[in-house]
Every structure is written in structure tokens, then in C-alpha cells.
Amino acid sequence: MQAQQPIIVEKNRPIKEWAEDDRPREKLIAKGPQALSDSELLALLIPGTIHHNALDQAREVLKKNQDNLQLLGKRSVRDLVKMKIKGFGAAKATALVAALELGRRRQAGLSPERPVIKDTKTAAAYLQPLLADYHHEVFMVLYLDQSGGLKHHGTLSQGGITATIVDPRLIFKKALEESAVSIIISHNHPSGSPQPSKADEALTQKIKEGAGLLDIRLLDHIIVGEKGYFSFANEGLLA
Image (cartoon, rainbow, N blue to C red; front, side):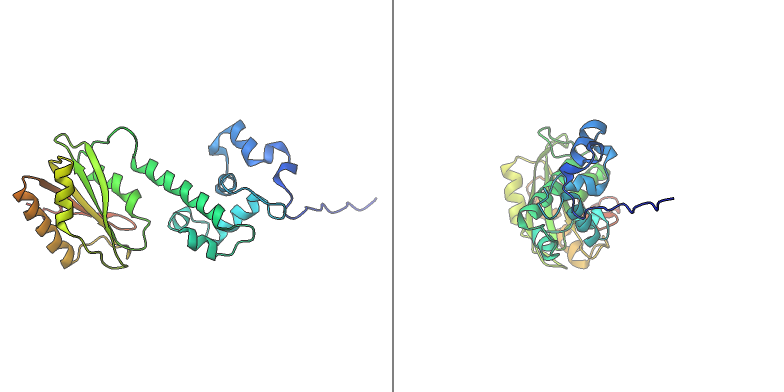
């Protein structure tokens, strides 16, 4: 009996030469995005080249990020380019970072309709996707109307790994411009632990007192960590 010939797989074979059911684009159209793996979804964002098909590049991007989408979501364009993946340059890195940011905003509920912040849980759910991925401290403020509707949210400052500088006057100036009746302040802790520092406590008290003079209520200060959050209101520290 004649020996079976080994199957030869052409390395970096162009996706257009694959069976139609195996191509990520056609697979998504036929079966929906849920049917695609993480690497197949990424491949749709980063077009391949003659020498490097998109799926191979996508797999390499994931591999360089421990096959962890949460870790990938924290990468900047510079971070991705530094990984030196063949065929994957600044243009593809930019497209990938943009897509991840869109996903973050969708998760946070940013839409033409103003979200209503009902309580600490609602506020934290809104803030965590926006703050959790930064490697440095970012200070953000939510400006609310009488019913808790979000009138505006803004990043007030960005700092180093362990601290950021906040000018309360800028918070109050924007609150008056937006005719906000209440505010929620928030920042992240890149270290991962959301427990407040003495500086966090002092800043919270300072903002609370200043807001009170303007008849603006400080509803909460939420500190976002990698695996949770700390609420000054829930802990009774704003009474």
C-alpha cells in the first residue's frame, strides 16, 4: 500500500485563498461575531500583507499580550509597535487602539442619550471602563443635574504612577458652566488597590467644603482599582 503523503500547509497563506467558511469576514457575516475567536476578530481590524496574513499577526499580538484582552486593552500605540511583530506597524496599532477605545466607551454607556447616575453602583459601572486601563493616575469628574442625569464628564488631570495634581477651582468652574447641582469625583489607582491614601482623604474633604459653599453637592469620590472600587459615600466618609 502506498504511504500517505504528508499534508503541506503553506506558511502565511493569504486568507483569500482559504475555504470560504474559514475566512473571518465571511464567517462573521454568516454566523455572527460570537462565532469568531479573539484572534479572528482582531484579524478583521488589521489587514494582512503579501507576506503576513492578518490572522497570523492577530495571533502574534495576542501571544505578546499573554492571550489576555484586558492586558491588550491597556496597550498604547507605542507599546504595540515596540513588540516588533512582523507586518504590524503604527497604522495597524492605531486601528487596534481605536477599536479598543470604542469598546471601552460602549461599555461605559457613552451614547447620545445622557445616562442617569442613580447610585454609587451605577457611577462605578460607568467609571470603571474609563479609568481601569491607565498605567498612570487620571482624575475624572461627573457633573449631574437635579435628576442625576449626566450633563458632562471630563478628565481634569493626569499624573504619574502614584499621584496626580488636582485644582478644585477647575472642578467648580466647570460645574457652574454646566449648571450642575451635584458632582462625583473619581480617579484610578494604577497599583491595583482602590484603598484611599491620606492625600485622597484630604482632597475629598477640600472639594466637599468648596462645593458646599457653591451649593453644589459632592455625592461621592470613587477610587477605581484593577479589581474593584472604593466609595467614600458607601463608607460613610462624606457625612
